[in-house]
Amino acid sequence: MLKQIKNFTRALRAPTAEDREAAYLNGAIDRIDLEYRQRQIDRGMFRKFY
Image 1 (cartoon, rainbow, N blue to C red):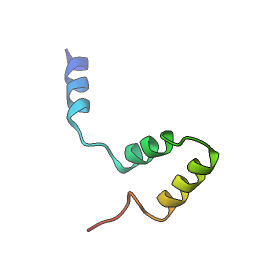
Image 2: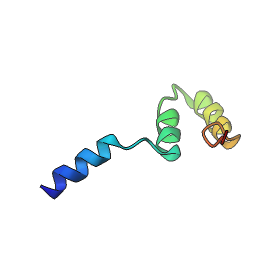
Image 3: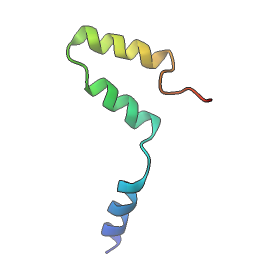
Image 4: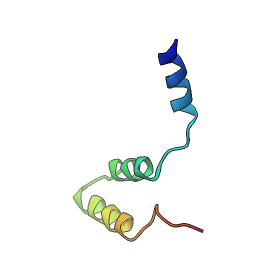
C-alpha cells in the first residue's frame, strides 16, 4: 500500500527543472538540434525566475 501512495504522489507532483530539461533534450532530432537545445539550456531557458 505504501508503494501505491508513493506512485500516486509522484504522479501528482510538478516536473522539476531537471525533468523538463531532460525531456527537452530527449526531443532532439539530430546532433545539431541537440547542440542547439544544450545551448538554450545553458543560457537559462528553464531556470528563469520571474
